[in-house]
Structures are given as structure tokens and as C-alpha cells.
Amino acid sequence: MRRVAGCSPLSSRRPSASRAEQRGGAGSHPAAGRGLRCGEGAEGVAAHCPLPPGPPKRFPVAAVEAILKAVLEGCLREQRYEPGLCREMAATVSEVIRARVKDLALPRYKIVVVTHIGQLNGQGMQIGSRCLWDPATDTFSSYVFRNTSLFALANVYAVYFE
Image (cartoon, rainbow, N blue to C red):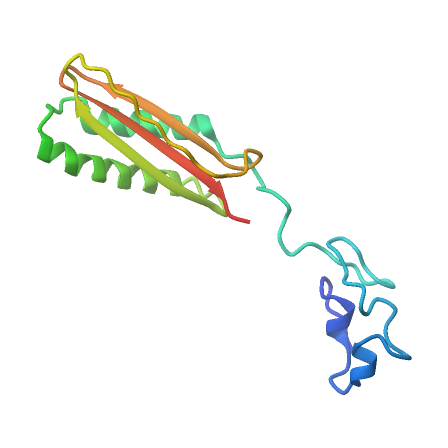
């Protein structure tokens, strides 16, 4: 029977193999019952990880910040604060940012975009967010925009999907 590279030795058995052989009985394969790990092969069979153990490239924080800046300034530069319109603009800006970040073709990253738009009246405001993630692979980008009438804060969260 022909062996396919990357398949475990157990999957290349004849379909007529007995239950005793599959459970590690007499005449069974030496690797049977000991679960092969990634990178571990048995008797000339090269095993490999079906999924790499981390992202192939890091999330480009600087490139995403440039996208945030371009989109916010392009959409809101001349915009005056109007509550109804700004509510719609927050959703539209989030969709545009998400599409532009998706165009970077970052495999296996889930992208979440949150945009806040508010009136600029000299008031103070604090916005917080909490996330449960892996700091080795997950990250975020953020940009704050202001004009004479409004402010906008856009956050892009990138969560690596294993």
C-alpha cells in the first residue's frame, strides 16, 4: 500500500486489519497506541504538523495604524458632529477599516473593529476595553482623530485563530 507523506502510520493500514492489531496486540505496528506527536515519525515515515504552531508573520501594527489614519481622516475631515449621522458614520467607518485590513491577507487572524465618534466640547472621556487573548499572537492597533467638531477613536483587534 502506498504511504502518503504527513499521514500517520496508523491511517495507512489495510482496511482488513483486525481489532487486536489496532489495539496493540501481537503483530501490531510499533507506533500503535502511543499517539504520534507533531514532527514525530515512525520507521521512515515523515510526520509534519498540519497547522504551523504560530502565525506565519506578525500582525502589521504600523500598517493597520496607517489604514486607521487614512480612513478616519478621509471620512471625517470636514464632518460636523450630528448625532444621527455620526452613529451611521461609526458603522460605515468600521466596515471600511475592516475591509482594508482584510485586504492585507493575514491568514487565520480574526479582525474586530470598534469605532467611537463623539462631540468635541472640551469634556473628558475615558474608553476602556478588555480582551481575553494570547499576548504572543494577538494584538491591536488604535488611532484617535479630532477635528473642530468631533473626535473619533478606532480600534482594530487581531485575534489569531489556531
